[in-house]
Image (cartoon, rainbow, N blue to C red):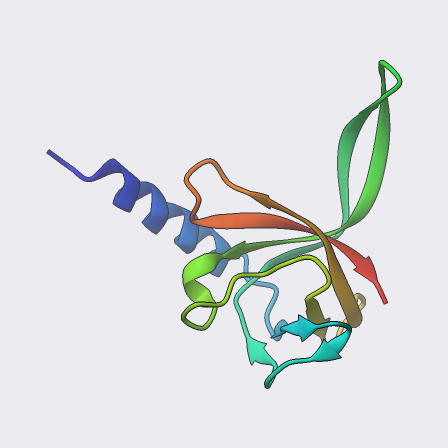
Length: 118
């Protein structure tokens, strides 16, 4: 019988690598200070991700930068957390972004990172 979790993990990872924005650097932070060296990670970056948020019983559309990442692409023992940074060195979305919220996927193999430009 196939290992469905392993297959889903492989498909998820392939999707992130297929749509990899390229050149994204991950920087772990500790109390607002960089901790260790920045490392490149494959990420599917969207500079204007649109979602619907429920507020006061109604839907309010929001747009914000996001990145899809796969946990296995991070250094061993490292997972993205709020306030860690993603840096995009070139292109129309070049800049440094803080992770405002992490939304793990259903399999626990990756996450949608909601970002804020810093």
